[in-house]
Amino acid sequence: MQLQKLISELELLAPSSYQESYDNAGLIVGSSSMKINKALICFDVTEEVLEEAKSIGANLIISHHPIIFSGLKKLNGKNYVERIVIAAIKADIALYAMHTNLDNVILGTNRILAEKLGLKNLQVLAPIKGRFRKLIIFCPVDHAENVRTAIFDAGAGHIGKYDQCSFNAKGQGSFRAGDHTKPFVGEQNKIHFEEEVRIETIFPDYLEHKIIAALKKAHPYEEVAYDIFKLENESSELGAGIIGDLETAESEVDFLQNLKEITEAEGIRYTKLRNRNIKKVALCGGSGAFLIHKAKAAHADVYITGDVKYHEFFDADGKIVIADIGHFESEQFTKELLISYINEKFPTFAVQISDRNTNPINYL
Ligand SMILES: [Zn+2]
Image 1 (tube, protein in one colour):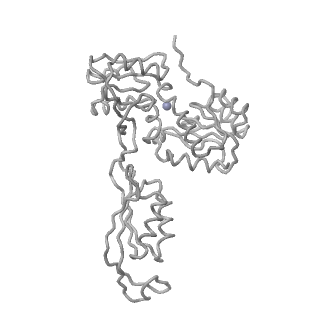
Image 2 (spheres, rainbow, N blue to C red; image 1 turned 180 degrees about the vertical axis):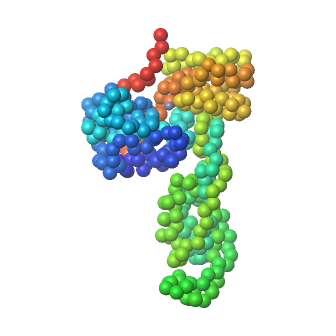
Image 3 (cartoon, rainbow, N blue to C red; image 1 turned 90 degrees about the vertical axis):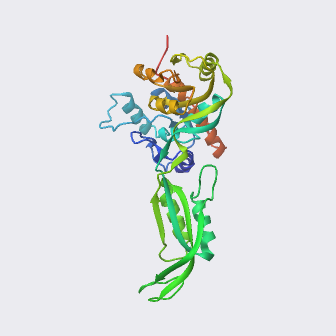
């Protein structure tokens, strides 16, 4: 299979344009036109993982963390990042990462941990604003359905679990075709009035090119009249962290014990218990201390994440229990998420999860 075919499908799950500005997710080594015969899924790309890929004949490694974060100025193998990049290029192995873009979609990193914990009614904890655009199109009445279908097929009109959303109002459009035109209706140099439909819909910003291309192809006019506006709306499916409810409330001790078992955490660092049951659970895989205040504001009973610093634990302030289970432990299930997604989309493509434990942290 051509790598681009797989990337296009992975981008439907988590478009790389949804990554945070500091991130470097996407195709890091390799060409999207190369043919891939087998993929290895891992959490971090290490030299051991690269050896494993070679040994099983995989020429694509899909990781959660990107191996290159900041720019590389020299490639002489002085550190593990450079050595891995050099080895991947030499072995013709492509490296692809799905990082904060996978964290920021509701079907991504946090959802899989939430499901493992049995949470229901999942909602994004810190929704992102400003990633939607409003599209307004003016189209002759008889062609409105064609145009709508074309832009819906290209990805416009999705709001939460609804699709094909639009608003349509009839009105009269006017135009005068100039010299060297071939107007679809009317005549050159004569004002023309046409019964038109004003179609309004929305789309996520990263689809703009695709949707406008589909619009221009389906619309009968020589000059297609349309407007695009930036919207400040929040998205219910996009943002950091997740919050949900346990089916039945649990004592704090039982909950933490279950959490330890499910995530196989060697240790959980947690703040003072509040002697009340846990029902509402907020979480963010990885380094999620930046969402402690959001979890408190959402009245979560517990907030699960990794990489919490000493002073950040004080922010619990008796209003929530913060549970730090570890960075690796809180995001480890992304491997399962990716393999089941790829297996579903490409049932005959060879893909497997790395059996190397890449967690750099040990506990005594
Ligand atoms: Zn991470």
